[in-house]
Image (cartoon, rainbow, N blue to C red; front, side, top):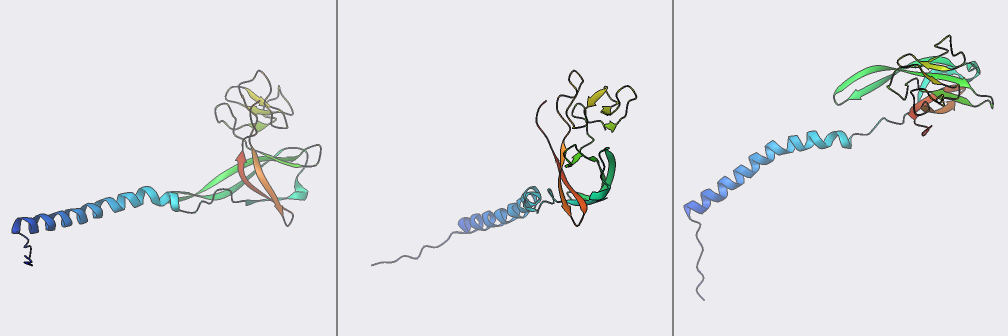
Length: 170
């Protein structure tokens, strides 16, 4: 048996070397871009966390009251404090209700008894949108859906609110 050693020609050697170096350089360019695209997906989400809004349960009345609290919001590498708002009250059954103040029509802020013409209703000044106290929209007004309600939890006599959830169509 005659075994011939296969020799690598100069051309093959340069071809293999340049292909390897080119692949290494391409990986060096593509890996950071891939990480930039995938990394935010892999980060743990703080969504759904409940935050103490600084309101004791015994202080909640049947009249909607505006409460504000601060949360830290992270957008990529930017951290900022954001003020959140809710209208909180007890309904006729004694349950605590926390409505989002964002109108479902154009995203303006609604206020409780914001109009003298419509007492005991939420009022949106943008297009005269109205909601009843329970958050459902008044028929024949611009909003087409009820106000969102915040998820809530009570711990040690304090109210904790989570994210607002839609209640469905009118």
